[in-house]
Image 1 (cartoon, rainbow, N blue to C red):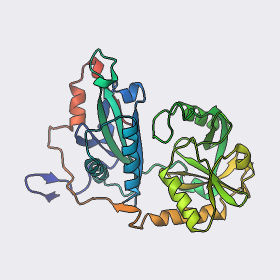
Image 2: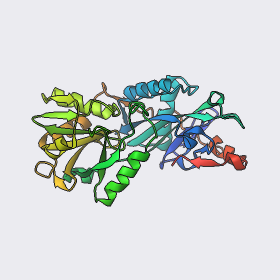
Image 3: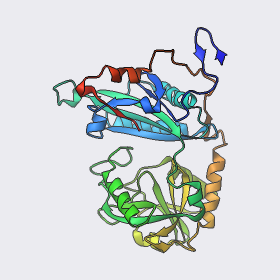
Image 4: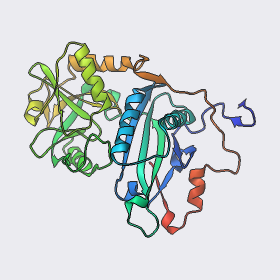
Length: 340
């Protein structure tokens, strides 16, 4: 135990399974709740972003905060907090959990409308964030042999309806496609648009090395931060990258295919629709780029140290975090939904 002026602090972080910030307080991840009346729950009316921490450093935190801010502006959401406060709460969540490798999510919802109202203008935005242990789309052991991918028959929601450059929770097309991929013994899935062009998967972008160059969809997909890193690293290595139309036929004849995500980095794909990609093993270009990607996490140009030395407050005996106290006062219509 260490001591501070007027406040007891934990010598070790109190919530290693994860920590959340909601309703102005930190609490254990399992106690973080939002109302079932929140429009983020009832209508998926929200935006979010995810940044990761690796070896105690945030990777490209500014880029994620930039995108989160732009997405909130596009959706007319106001979290009621400035950027510096949002950044501080992300550090705080990681600090309260004591994680060296973390998946750190921030969300702003439309909030709740006034009782009896259907007027969106009466809603007040709701912001929350949390940090949990690192999440992998493709685990390190899977990456050694490469993941299997299915090209789905499910069509991606058109960008004219839901803009994919604004990170959102409109995932029914993605989830149903992924469940179908599991039925076909595939680990991952990619969806196509109405024209038949490849778009993206559930939380990841796709790249194919075909005709001597990398190709990734230039339209109808999230402009992923890891996607940006992949493009930069490939070009630094003298490899050509085209942001252009990508088809299923391109994937089938590629010598290397990979997906990119904050939840795992640069991850090789070795099988598509049951057929091997190239030699059927992760290719040399993918391995090289993956190594360079993780090396970047130690570069201060791209990474930010977590502020672990800031105080970690210890809840006083008999006083629950605010997010749990609110639940105890809730009536039938105020029931809460866990974040996880």
